[in-house]
Length: 268
Image (cartoon, rainbow, N blue to C red):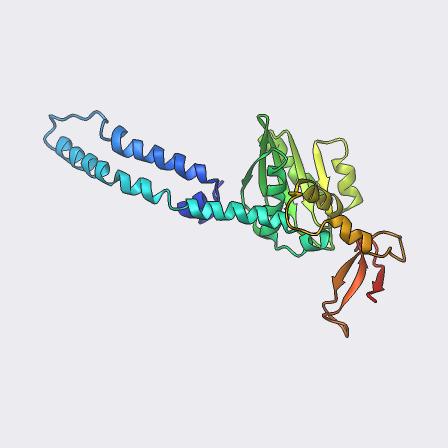
């Protein structure tokens, strides 16, 4: 689905490369062969000559138009590579939470794509609105809302909104994805319905499960094995950087369950 005020070039650049090839071929055949073959009253002294002139012009510019429609292909290939690199470069929940909302949606889309879904990025509502991804698999449609919230909980209203859209579009299921958490009301509403809630912890696991094991990247297990246990809940800790206060810029160990647990340790 095209974004508001999105040009044809931008739309094709956001699609897989073969979309540009297919569309270019279709336009070429239409302009080169189908349009000039439209039956017209050739004996008409006014309409006949005008149509012939237009048809000849369309016939002549068809190769140029088809070529121009192939220009988005390099951008499409780059966007595909960038999405793959974004997923491969994630080192855990903290790096996911650092992503902006658009990159967060692309990360989620790439993770679903590697699970065998066909993914369409709708881009309907910016940082906080609408259906962000449409998934297709085995002739079934699934809708996804992405909520890039670091500390806030996703409320039941968001889940209800998705459920309403699912019913309107006759979708087989839906997902709400966040790097944060869900309220108990949201969990209760989704329970028993064809809606899957993916919080930060589950998202981290989903991304890790589809990452390329041959990628040059420090395994998450190696990080965890050298990390101390949280003094409050005994969970694994991760390195964080202080952003404010007297120790701004310094590193410390923070609980991986933050913000549920705010246990910290100094890095010796």
